[in-house]
Image (cartoon, rainbow over all chains, first blue to last red; front, side):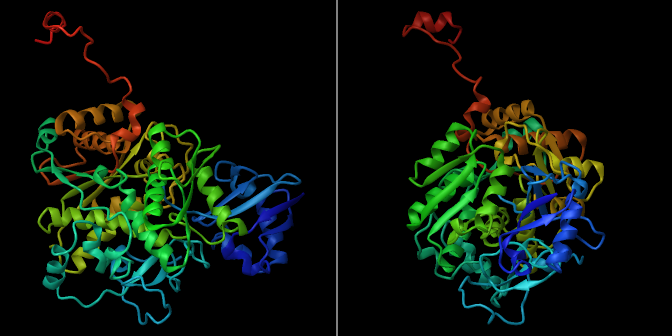
Length: 91
Length: 435
């Protein structure tokens, strides 16, 4: 499955400044593993030492927050958009 | 991951302030609350190492405690009396801004009798701010950061109150404003945000969707040069809530309250009130004694109280469904810190139903003449519930926050209206049983 991943500003040092990159994978976990292959170091920024999504990272597959779905097991259909976004507070 | 203790974060000293030329008073750098990674002052909000929230690290001037107290007491009747403790330039009071704060701390004896509080009950009534919510305090900090970083457009994602505060502050300071809100907010808040002449954009979605949109806009060329007060200026913005703690203590005669009940949306306000109290202790402005911080949520958006009651230290996001729209943040970024603080201080986190919120709004209005917005109904309602459950001690001095004006959320009490309609005659008056 080929998906488009939106990269937040603080991770663009890993993508040569690109805000969007392509990645492969049937689940979010596979997509992040594929990102790591092409942009070494990026996975450690998004995942903690236990391999889980970091507490202050929000990830959306299309419009769905993966914490409401299956986390790293969330399916990433062909053509899906994946957004990685730092959590922010306010209101 | 390394967690820094709250106390050690409250007053930090850095080795050097030469890592920046930006003049934001005692603010010396940004420091990650999770891993401690430091970066120079700038319009950034997330740690490049671990995504944790960046906070201000201060280098406070070496004041003698009594000199600082005198200086504060001689300062203006607004938040700038605390300028030496805030990330703002020393001459901030002379710059065009809304000069918020120094709102009333109302001794609520009638409400105390109703609730059975004997130790003294106070309402910190922040509806008295220029745009009638506490948001003026935080926006005022972000405005100074926006000036320092050369932004000319002020923006935000908002549940309503912030939109108005940003619109007004931008108007006064000569900034352009463009703010984003959920499309279905209360009419009062929409009008209050729009009237200042900036651009107001409704997003089809809830606050969390708006927040996500703004986060993406910041990373896009379309958002370049924009100061989002609660996103890329958030480390500065959030510090404004410390002034609630400063004012409460000063208004109590430089004394810590025993208990304080704070509404939770993102959780930022509660964590900064704790930070403010800790700073006053470290600076010697108040006596170091125990205090308890209680968090208040609406049942229809209660991710933090749910986690608290379950004994969790992780907050599971919820889809909000409550009349308390200013608190309707289903994915509260500072939720874990709220849990830490409630547990550390011996407080608690509780929630109330929409019906209890409305009852509490009316209770506060009829006992103290304070018309609170729904968030104020949440804190008063939760206070009542905490007293009934024994978690809040009625024999201790208690401060309850009202963070906004009831005129903004008229729909919540829409059923309240005329007692009677009569002809303009005395007979009609008597017939209606009003004599």
